[in-house]
Image 1 (cartoon, rainbow, N blue to C red):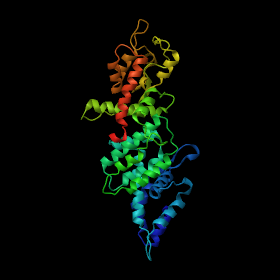
Image 2: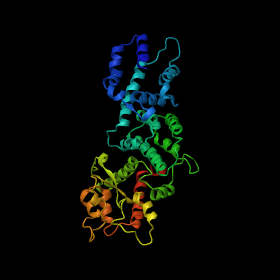
Image 3: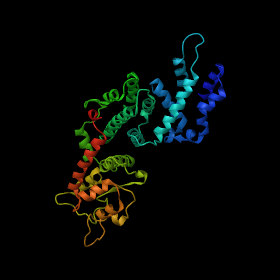
Image 4: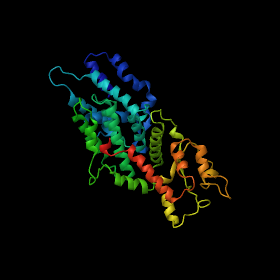
Length: 376
């Protein structure tokens, strides 16, 4: 692609060295980044290939095979070439668009900001739905979309994807959906925000395979499904982190939200997985029932330092056999709002009834983080 563009620039008698320095040099200057292979197994390929695949998909609004990027680029340039005698491709515009989208692509993969849109980009990495990258590039580069419009689009797409993930709904249609969203975005006049049209496109009815789960389905799955061992650990971390960030914002009101290095947090079972030593079954609760709730969201939290095993497996409150207690450990070793509320709200016991109550409370927060279309 570079050679074709520079060859075309030579034909047009443009200053090729200056074009290279202004537009293409960043790719070669940071070659380690752009040539690094990303992906898993046979799907792994240089990052620059992935970028151009997404850039081309954004512009053609068609799925582009990684094996046919160059061919697709030539067809795209031919299809968009000006007509008429002496007309030539606008090389400055093409190179400028590639350069600007390369900056956006790096931001998608390593967001640095603190907006709602940046939160979405960080969570998108955990959701692992790269088919939406071309659409996101288009949103970031859209002339009529300001920060508020981007944030609304981010909230909508994130809510749609997270709700579907927790409800264990299929992802097979996401590629086609991402292309549809590109068409929807392109149809919105640049003088108008795009969020309403995008929200409307995502708001599929309950009968559809691509539905945006309503609160009833979302609550049922959120409060009853096995999170730990069913969802990927990084996704469980993402969900708990989003709830923690929401708690912090509510606790601090207008003050800056306290920032944790969430990469260092680990998932902690409140009632430990090896519960038999210090956690007798509640009356009327069977062992298999406890094992189901053990891995539900109501029994999961985050800790900034891995608890000493003796504390992690300790009873909720001190006993004659154990002076250590899980409640004390969480109170002393954590500054997270998740654990401050846990310790405050459960001073006397931790059992299946507490897990059920906490799962419902966490759902109320999750519903606010990932709202229904009409609340965005």
